[in-house]
Length: 163
Image 1 (cartoon, rainbow, N blue to C red):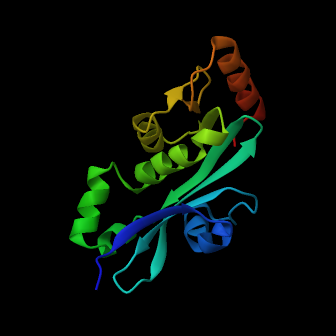
Image 2 (image 1 turned 135 degrees about the vertical axis):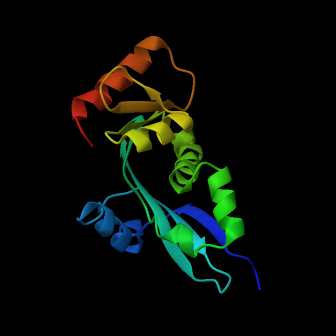
């Protein structure tokens, strides 16, 4: 029998698979458009339960991240070993966000987040995001870009408003 583990992946029907988690957190339906990243707790018996969800919307060279939610009750159900590994990694959201950044970095110049929550912002910054000079707008540069290109991408993301 294997131990419980965390399994993070992009899931085509992630809006469906994380629906209850998203509804509990936001009181609404998850986005129907790609991309859905879910961290599953994989139990010893093979059952997979969504414990963290983050949505990303592609927009040309950039990716907009939002709709992040964590099943805070899940930590109490996890094995002590898995719980400690998650804590050591910075928490479910940070581990899932860092996985997503690595996953999407090859195809996008920048990943943006619009964050009005102080705790989530601390996690975003710890995961390599930085402030843009616009309130609530954060960015994770996935490659070296000149200042003009960075400014163009920040302006493009900022023009969208909250996402």
